[in-house]
Amino acid sequence: MKSVCVFCGSSFGTSPIYADAARETGHAIASQGLTLVYGGAKVGLMGTVADAALEAGGKVIGVLPTSLQEKELAHEGLSELYVVGSMHERKALMAEKSDAFLTLPGGAGTMEELFEVWTWGQLGLHRKPCGFLNTGGFYDQLLTFLDFQTNEGFMKPVMRAMVQSAATPAELLDLFRAYQPPSTPKWIKKEES
Image 1 (tube, rainbow, N blue to C red):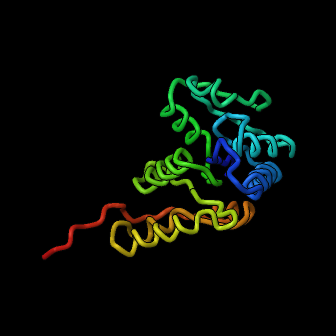
Image 2: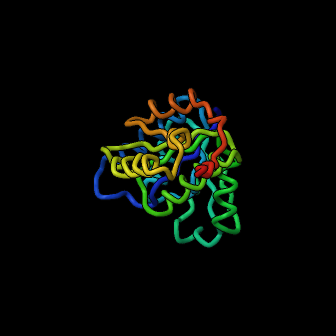
Image 3: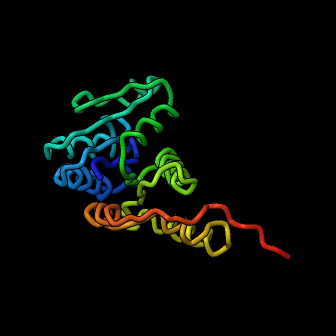
């Protein structure tokens, strides 16, 4: 593992623990000699994680679509900034440049990014780990729902186990290093009557 993509909010949320987690994540990635790949903005948790990695001497790659360049205020101090034509190109390039996907607190866009790469992994399009940094229990209810989906037969347990969670960045990075992708197919076989 050489690079970690971080999905997170372009706002700070209501508690200072989220910015603290973003700082801790940026420092952990850089201090372990890993490259941070993220959405390229200087605002909210996005800017915080990038600034922390840069302060710790790390390499930071940002990917920002042209349409959001001004709205999200592109971070100008990055090691590399790619400006692309669309959100689809953004996500594809972030995935291409990353060996793992870590999700900090965020909104709908953050969820969509993580769920897409998790789905790609289920389909065998990549073999990279992904997971939630469960800061202050932020993802507790979502993780409970994912377990419910599994119990209700809409997800195989092996597919549910693909998305990991931990309370600290160091723990999650350790889980990523130990990750073994499933060898079973995603498709749930139709029950025979």
